[in-house]
Length: 182
Image (cartoon, rainbow, N blue to C red; front, side, top):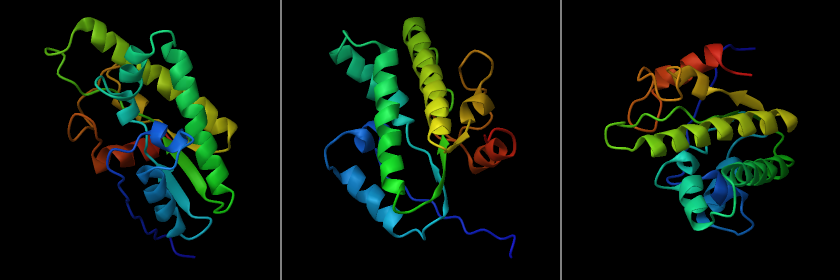
C-alpha cells in the first residue's frame, strides 16, 4: 500500500449549505452531485461548505432580517440539519468517508463594521460551528475545526491562516488537519 494520496479540489462558486439542504433542485445540487459522481466510491472527502452561510451580508444573518420571528439558533439548526441530511442521504450510494469542515473565524476590518454587527457575526459563526460539529458526529462524519485554529481568543481571526477575508491558506488547512480534526 502506498503512502501517497491524490487530492483534488472542486469549487462550487457561491454554494451555501442552504442551497444543498433545501428541497428544490438547483444548480448547486446539480454541480455537487456531478462532482460526487466522478469520485470513486468509498473515497475520503472533505466538504468545506458553510462559510457563505455565515457572512454579515449573506446567508443566515440576511435571512434572519427578513424573518425576525425566527431565532438565530433556530435558523442555524435548520440549515445545518437539512444540509447534513442531504449529504447523508446522498452518501448512501457512494459510501464516502466524509469530513465536514467548520467555518473559520471572521477576518474582517473591525474599523468598518459596528460592534453590534461584529458580536452578531461572531455569535453566528460560533453557534454554527457548534451545531455543525455536533450534528456531523451524530451522523458519523468527521469534523475539521478551523474555527479553533483561527480564533485569536475573541471569535475574530488571529490573522495567521487566512489568505483573504474569507478563505484559509493551504498551510492553514494542513495545520488544521494536524491539530483540529475530530
